[in-house]
Length: 171
Image 1 (cartoon, one colour):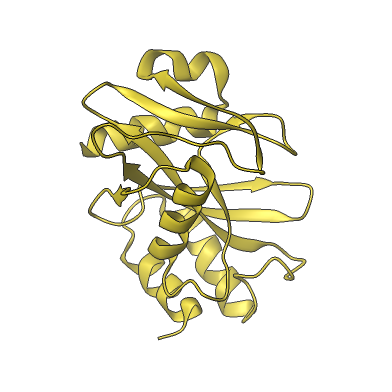
Image 2 (tube, rainbow, N blue to C red):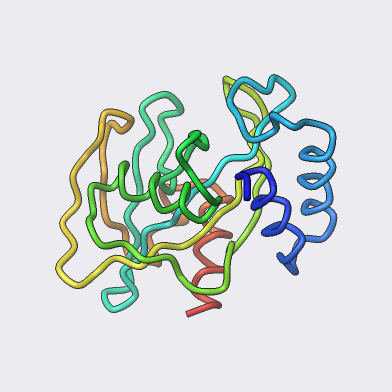
């Protein structure tokens, strides 16, 4: 199965945000290249909120280009077999945390936002950090820091706050 086919199946199975979900499906129907950065009309991306529920905290990255505290995530790559795999790869690469596992049940949220390269149709997952997780900053980040659940609204935008709320509701 292609990544495009997987994305369509994942989105068809996602049972929230009906209107936005349909925007994603329409985009993929109109753009066979709708998962790739080269698609100028926007592209599907995958992200993962790295969470440590036992310590009630999340790991956020200070994005190098956007200069905002965000969850880990980004563009799909040709080697990604699924959206979940893309989210897990991005989460691992950008956090440096080995042994992340995605929260069961598929995507937690969808978020469409404009970036310097194009519209991102982000499929957002949550990744559970293993006990004793050690983070390591990547080239895509200015900083990497754990924040308590109650601190996220002070440093991150509404999209991250909504993602954290949806993730906590699933725990």
